[in-house]
Image (cartoon, rainbow, N blue to C red; front, side):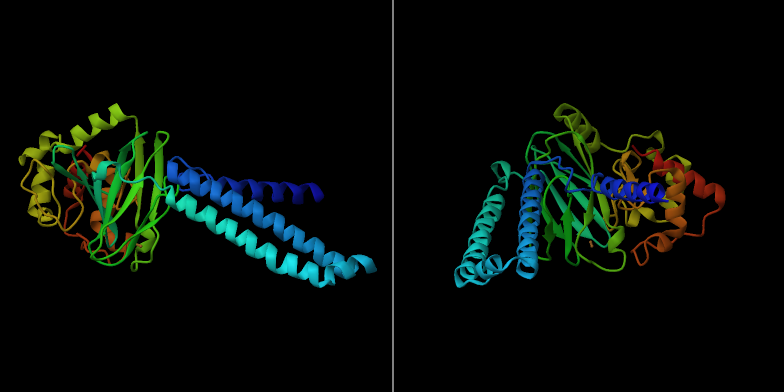
Length: 328
Ligand code: CUA
């Protein structure tokens, strides 16, 4: 019986801790700012724990201690020292430390914006600003080079959202009429998950994204490809998949560079098949998931601005979904 209980307790603790170290955890930092936040967290947690333990010991002594100990605890000097001077000094030191951590936030490198990210109900518009001035639109995924600080201009198209990738940096709100700048500086390659951290309407919980930190050369090659048009033969407008896409009027809201689809209301789909997920990290990136999204998106993400298209015959839906998935 005892062994079973211990096993359950150990497994539960292991599971809970495992949850602390996933791709969306501030306790598994991969970036400069996140590392400072991580250190701040442990200083606060351990410091707070030690002080809490001290208070418990003093409380126990005050109740169960011998006469002289209780007298010492009750003396005006102890009360003044431990009740007034100690907390004031501790909080002052912590405040100074917290302000130093905030001040150490990496400034935007030479003021250049790496990408603009706009929060929209309920997805992320990502526009890379290339050094030569070209702008490349993408959505729901950000790729960055490792080891280089990159400045993100955070904006919103509607309500307040909050951009948060716990493994890379603290959160920063996206406020109507304002541009907030957040610098990310990834220290190792890998995939981190981010999440909108400000309630922004019904499907707020389905507003996530991925940040992929890549070695600089791999990133440059990727960005060059991302800047180009969709790479499928089908995208020339002749293929059946694109014909269905065009016939449904999808191009009124979505863009596919290299075709006549130039809509800008919804996410750019030029290289949608190459992303890690669909619908702002809500669905896996598969042809089946495209089909579910097209026919049933109001159940998947209630009240999103795309209507559900249930007018397609089964084979048309499959063709359209495969076409979208092939856009890499
Ligand atoms: Cu966007 Cu919550």
